Every structure is written in C-alpha cells, then in structure tokens.
Length: 438
Image 1 (cartoon, rainbow, N blue to C red):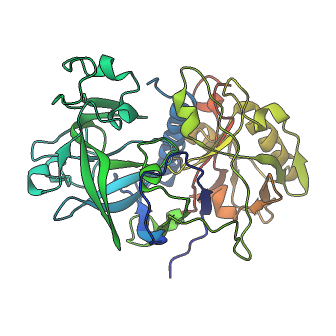
Image 2: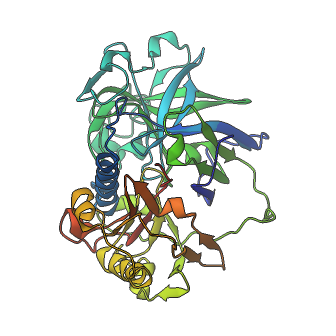
C-alpha cells in the first residue's frame, strides 16, 4: 500500500469571483510525480545534486517572478520533483497530463498536431509523442475573443490597448485575444487562448479558459495553474477549498498516486477531527510583482530542532509591504528553501545537537547541500517541527528533511549561498514537498 507521509496541505480558498458553481461538492483526481528522467543515474549523489539545484532554481523564480463541490483526481509522483494530474477537455473529451503548479495561474496544454517542443529530450517520450489537444476534434472549442473580459485575465492591459483592430466602444469585434507567451523557471510556452469544456468526474465546466500552446521550450506537459489568480483552475471552478497529499520520493515513477481533492461547497467552518488547521496570511501587494498576490502564504511562527527553538527574527517570518519575508507553500518545489540567514540558524541548531558525529564535507561540496554526515555510527536524529499561526504544528517525518544517499545522510534544505549569491528578495521560506528515497 502506498505511503502518503510526505506532506498534506488543505488550502482554504477565499476567492473574490466565483466563475462556476455546482451542487456537486467533491471531486478527487489522482496526483503523481511527473517523470522527465527515464534513465536516472545510479549515482545517488548525482540525483541529490540534481534535486537540490532544481529546488533552488524554482525558489529563485518564485522570489523573482517575471513581470508580467468535491472532485477527486489521482496525483502521481515523478523523479524531477513536480506532480501531475490528468484532465479532460473538449467534446468528446480528450485527456491530457498536466503538471500541477500552485506557483502560477494559467492553465494550458500542448495543442494541435503541429505542436513544437524545443529541448524536450529529457521527456520519457519523444517530443512528437507528447500528448496534445486537437481543437478541430472538439465541437465545443472556441477561440477567446479580444473583447471578452476573460482576455483581461491573461493580458492585464485596458481593452482598447489590447484590441487595436476593434473600433472604440465596439461590441461586435471579431479580433481574437492576443497570443500569450509565458516564462517559467526553465523554459517557456506560447499560443492562443481557447474557451473549452472541462470534463471533470461527475460534472462538466463550460467556457473554461485554457491556453492552446503551439510551441514550448523544456516543458514536458501542460501546466495546471493552481495559484490564486482569476485564470487559475481553482478560481475558474469557484472552489471553496482544495486539498492534496504528496507521495514519498520512494514511490517515484512506480504508478502509485495520492489524490487532489477539489471542494466547491463551503463547510461553514466545520473542521475534521485529528487535522490541524492554520489560516492563510494576507498576500503582499507589490508593484511590479503581481505573482506575489497569487502565492499561498502561511503563518509560520517558529521552527524547533529537537527541544531547541530556532530564534528567527519576525521580519523573516512575516511578509512585509515590499514582498520580502514570509513563508509560502509550493507544489513545484522539491527541497524546502530557506533564506540564507534563516538557514544558518537552523543548520547551527542541527550542528550543535549532532556535534559528536562526523560531517561529510566532501559530499556537502559535491551536492551543494549545507549539512551532510556519515551514516556510520549516527543513531540519534533531532526532530524538526514547524509551528504555525493558530497552534498547528507539523512534526516532520525524518525522510522529509534528511535523506540517505550512499553512505551519507544530508539535510534537504537549500539556500542561496551554496549555489549563488544570497537573496533577501521575496518569500524567506518556500515549503517544498520532499520525501525520502534510498
């Protein structure tokens, strides 16, 4: 039986605009890791180095973003850190895999027989075999018009500026919504915007805004944006909340999955027994950084290592008006990221409590991780816990913050100074979804 011990988050969404509502209350969708490395290296240190590097790259992207009822779906785990779901669009429905991303808002899929994907050799399939949506096979596909208010979700400029072929005050213009180009951590995508029917288990959602990408770079699948912006999947479905559990890395590419659960009805404050809750923190509104308004900030109040409280200044735990500081949850981050100042405090606490054991400094240098030990003779492990606003406490399983690789064990928290210059911009802590592997 699958072990769902990595991380479980329940996201209570307070959305200003409810685009769609339904008497159906719950939908569950399988959620799994997405595999872009069909031939992983047998060297455990190389895998550790890779995961640390992509986690830090992801954190840098989140900290410095470019300007610019219940259904259940399986959530599968894969070896490069992201999690995938399968969604069906069109009439009749076409099923396409998507990477679930709480750090972005737009939903798009590879589109048409002519879809081009550059530098996608890391995919387990050849680029021509990447599943694509074919609009001409769907009777419900329509191109989003430029005057449609939903076009403003993608192009945040006034109607007249984006619809240059339309007469002022016209209500009958045939110009389409301008093409989009989106930049991600690595890679990009571009195409045109459709309105299409999303076919979920038990209900259909008409007029769903989705990108029809004609070209991409280093994108092995479509992206299902789960951020807090208007074009995101939760916003378009009018979800009151969604929840997901992330699988252990031991289950990478095994076919095992957990679930993403979508809730469209409010539970009027009802709380499940034996589940801890913490409210979201108000997002900072920063000029030139609109992405900060889409993240899921939580009120991390303190971190304990063993019996010791790590003394972290409040300015690092709470987002300031400039967008610096605070803690966010991110489905696309593997190893948790900490600002270098915070990381050094946490590391020092571990070093003090493990002072009788031998550091593996050569592995620290090789992997870029800040704290590794030789496994031999290591019998005690300080427990690390996150304490949140409202009294919720997350006592992390050991495999969530220490991973065994070969003859060493390493603290799987990344920070700036190892791979590059320190950065105080943006969130101080990005909670990732790491799980153990051996």
